[in-house]
Structures are given as C-alpha cells and as structure tokens.
Length: 494
Image (tube, rainbow, N blue to C red):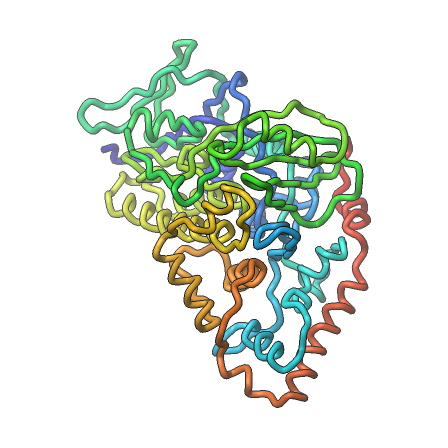
C-alpha cells in the first residue's frame, strides 16, 4: 500500500469520467495529479439525459454557472416525471420534485388529504403541489419569492464535453488511447498502471473505473463480483433514438408504460431523446424498434440503437485502490433518472473519504456500506413502479404484478397500505413525498391515516385545503410558459 496518494487515473470519459475529473480538479486539484484516459473510438451510451434536483448542488459546489451549462447542453427544466399506463391502462400521474401541501410534526400532508377525502374534499393529491401544477400547465420560472424545485433535461454528450473543457482548464491531463491491459502489483494485488494499445503506460496511485458495463478495472482486473437484480427488474435492453423537436418542450419527462416495458420522452431545446426499455423475454429487438418508432414524433435524427444491460451492482464499489463510477459500478434502469445522481453521490462520498495518506480498510468499508444502502433504496423505489400495478394485459405485466420483491419493499408498501405512514431507509435519496406520489398514483390507498389530521374541525379543514390549493393556482397563473422562460434565460445557439 502506498503511503501517499497523489496520482489519480480516471479510466474512461463520458459523463462519469468527466464529472469525476471536474470535481477532483476543482476541489482537490492542488493536492493531486489527475489523468483521464479515454478512446475516441468508444462511443458513449448517451441516453442518460434526465437528472434529479441534487445536480444543482453539484454545480454550485464546482462553481458552474447554470445558464452557461444549460446553453452548452441544450438543456430544459425538469419538474418531475409523468407516468402513463403504469397502474392501469389510461392512468396518468406525475411524480414531481415538489413538496405537497404542508406537513406537521406527526406526519406529512397526505394524512390531511386522506382525512379530507373522508370529509368529501375530492381534489387530487397533486392539486396541492406547486411543481406538479406548473408541470401540468407547461410553465416555469425562477423566483426568490416562490422557490421551485427542479432538475434538468440535458444532452449528456455535450455535458461531458463541457466538463472536459472545465477540467482541462484546471490542469487535468487527457490521454487518448484504448486500454489494452490493466497491470497489478504482484504483492498487494492493487492496480499499478494501464497499458494502452499504443504501448504507452499510464501509472497511478489510485484509479477510478468509468469504463462502462465492461468494468475493465473493477471487474475484469479485480474480479469484484456482481449481484444480479434481474429477478426484480426484468428489463434487460433498451432501444434509443433522437428525433427533431416538433413542439415546445414540456418541463417534465414522460414515462409511458408499453406492453413489455416503458418508453421515455426527454425534451431538449432542439430535439427529443426517445427510448424503449424492454424485457427481451417478452419482446424481440425488432418488435421493440417498431413499438418505439410507431410512438414518436418528429423526424429521426439518429438510427435506432439497441443497448443490452443487466440490472444489478458490483459487490464492492471500492475495491483495493479502485473505485467504480457510473455503469462500471452497476446499473439500475433510468426510470427515475438516478444514473447521473449516483455518479455524483459516489464522487462526493469518495472526496469525503479520499485516502491522501494511504488506503485503510475502514474507509473502503464505509464507502461500500453507504453505497449499498443508497443502491438498495433506489432499487426498491424502481421496483415499486413495476410491482404496484393492476395490469394483466400482457405476460410482462402479469410477471411484474406477481413477482416476489425484496422484504424491505414488502414492508414499506404494506406499512403505507395499513397505516398511511412512510419512513425512509438509510441512503434513501427520494423523500416521503416521492414514495407517496408513486404509491397513490399507482393505486395503493391507505386504510388509515394519522389522527393529527383530525385536529381541525370540518370548516377549518376545508379552509386550510382550499387556501393551499388557491395559493398554488394563483402562483402557477403568474408563471410564463416553459418555452418563454428558456428563451430569455438559457436559449442555446444551434
């Protein structure tokens, strides 16, 4: 084991590699030498175009100007995800990034809403969420007086390019080349260097694996192992295509359940990212391509491309002197736009635990324990969407409805159904509001709620609920359209 860690080698570029390079060079650059190795021959997957709100914190930490990065990546704003046909055919709900209503010490707003239903107040749960109503109205604006919680839709390839230029200015060295061999120290088993196809050797003290699904370092060299989650998340392929935008961009992602999977629509300023995530057991590649191309709008800008994947995770995110980020660390399908977030949280965790004066097992264990808690929570949240369905119109949905799920998710769903309560697990990146919106949206109705909701008499409850709804309606009416705000705030030069 080295006494000092000074030379970081990032294997692979793309979103994961350049996010890591940007963060390390900006926040720890004076203490480290950072080299990134990538090959121009290797195309990135390029489908991770939607984010969740913590990315704003990442940009703030790095001093990245929001308007600048949005222009560079042709970005639009994202207030949530619209789910169509998930509970039943014809269903539609939005999982928004906002807080619904007002909570109190004993429980969240949905307890008051459930009590209101019993008292004849029939408004939708989403009527009390500012971000959700703005999304439905296709409106957006930034205001100090009325804060709004949001993320981005962005061009992932342009995002990596932006971060590359950002990192190079901070001293990151980019080495062009294809990794041919990963060299290890015979005694410690740690990675010592990378040999490129050109014969060049890139030495390092610490390595970050961003080589994608193949995991050249974390798996092929260190044999870390992989936990397969396909028995809970059966989709194993996607087909992706880009189309020309034919309408103003919506401020939310669309997720449309299909016969053997689900379709995404991600609106950028100039184009739309489209894809179909599907299970090859129930749908052929050709059928998937036909389903996708029959349900898109606008001229094709790219040819449909099939992407194969296995859902699951490496048994260790940090093994010896290597940390895996992005696809090399594992994959949970992009249903809730968690891919870029998991890269970011892995980077922040590593920054906080970085072994400047040598690697200790306790630090490795802490990283892996926190990573596992986070991944388990995300996994359960994604499985929830498939399990909480009443659909029986295809073999795929019958399988999802009847499949066994992790005990942790069984408990969370049953607790909500029995009591209306949601308690978050360690590492859960989604708030109670998120779990509540999805469970209510897909037909899980609690049989109880907290009695604190009965603290108000009927008239007080009615006034409380109507006042909340009216204030949100009024605030949304004041907003410009999403397209108008983009035009004035971050319009891209094409």
